[in-house]
Image (cartoon, rainbow, N blue to C red):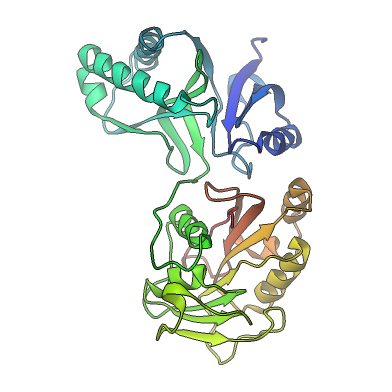
Length: 358
């Protein structure tokens, strides 16, 4: 690797690294290695170059200035990580909490336990060497959304750790299930709320297109929102018969909101052609029928990179009208992307975007 290149690594759900590698290529990043759930390579341009990682839909997180640490045992790896941390904080005055993010690839089996053992020994040794710095560490296997600075490491195999001072987190996180939720899709919208830092509140109006069996409807109802659940199919679990829901048994593509009040939220989670869903969402956004948008795009038979490219067009009738529009392939996703955004005026609630799974 030349002096003008910097090592970079991103990770994702295992089995989707091929899509992530293609996103890298389209972003101008050079893939040099990849394995189950990760892609590594270089970003050209030296220390001043900023890798365009914020728009990577499949990346759960990215370390843009990575250093490879070798070692075959827990003790050797913990020592190497401790030494790197000492150099990283040399001459740095640590004023407050800093993120310590140590993650691991989903395979091979047992790698997560190895990560945990290394982290435990590393933090114990760090307390002995740099007590105050260690005390301010906030450890997690999941980075906070957006850019953060601290210590970030990724175990891509039993004998290789990638570590760096900065990390970009996509916002993906595993959510807790609810026994009253009618379906697993409930977890997808819960993860979207987490990413957004925004969720429906008491009295807000939600339109849920393709609602049955009611996972997304239930997520809004439990927060005190009022839901128009649009689907010819039945609602189940905590969504069935709830006093806050009005079940509209009609075609979601033909449904139009009634009354003068603009719905606060539009939910859309339907097993349909993703381009048809995009056109439907564009109709709603262009007409001003919602303030916040959370929708899934199923890409099972479609190329997800083509959908991403379509939505990233600067003048696309949907995304050009959404503020802070994002796409993410989330922890609870499989073959789908989730799009989130806001149509409200500046100063109103922000947006989200994601990818989820059924």
